[in-house]
Image 1 (spheres, rainbow, N blue to C red):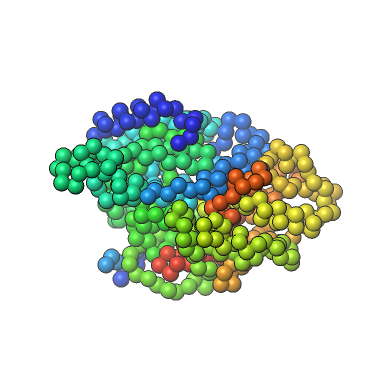
Image 2: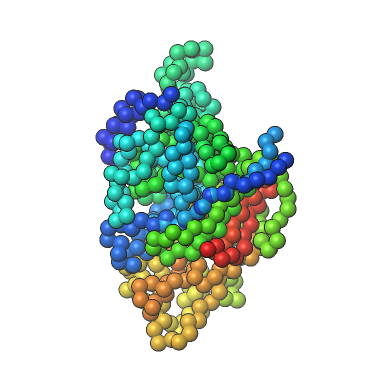
Length: 468
């Protein structure tokens, strides 16, 4: 839990929670996906916006790299809109409860628990963004739903977060023969890089209008949060994730281009449910198999294997130990929609950035912009009629190539005279940042790509698209 989250707030939610009243054909679930955008009060400065996003990307990388894990249906395709936002994520609108209450959630492939801001007493510290009034964040009201109920300590779904020994933490529940166990599942506290949230677990209806309802969906009722102005829908690989609970065969999305400003443009996210396993590959998509990390601490993540990185026509000589997790689980690449900028461990980043510096030697470094934006390297391109930037490509196991569009790895920063590499690393040197995935492929690099997580066939697919 973030140290800035007030301890009295955590105690208050325990008191409040004790008084909460809870009593083989194919079609589509489709939701809209949009870039999420909320600025800090000082973020009218474009350099500060980028610095905030770079800092949050590195902080999230630390969280992911030092992850502390919790211990016959007809096929259907669900579709939902996906919206971009400027605090780095993309949101979907989903409905919970009876009657349904609709809220926006950040779509996150790097975590598994879904949760919403909950009750009228919801408290979000450090959430004073210009477009967000912390006292008016939309919340779910359990007392207005007839289908919600608290999760009991002996409910198997409580084990998803707290492990098989959770009953020993619950009064009158540690004795299997006891009939007096009526305690709820313990409260959860979850860290997201710079943010955090805490609350109690519910079983609630997840509704996709007009005709699909998933009963007893495990979801968090968060009473306190830090730097979390919206709830999260977890698309990770743990049992409590949305893909696991809905038994998805696959899910896919196409992230619209974002420039960190408010927009109503969205794209669709598709969710294919059911037990059918269609091995048909979509024409034009490159595929690479998911890699299974043997370290249980990282089972929640979607690993893929990069074979090589090219800058221009030059292969960057990255040691293979960075591309494939070792016996301890460290190394490798994960795909994370919750990270804004791609993160590379410093040894990898330095090799990549130095190759860009070498091939862009005719431009001078913009050191001042680097210092205030948190990005590097940055180059001054004033006086050049044409900007000559080498291509950047990832080659994956199985032969798939992701040749990034220029806008996905270099961007104009501030005025038109400076461009910066939109990949981040830890500023420190040493072993403190080592461990976990060496590369985290963020959503900025996924813009205008159709992305497919084919769970039934254990593969990751992608192709360039105009997502708008």
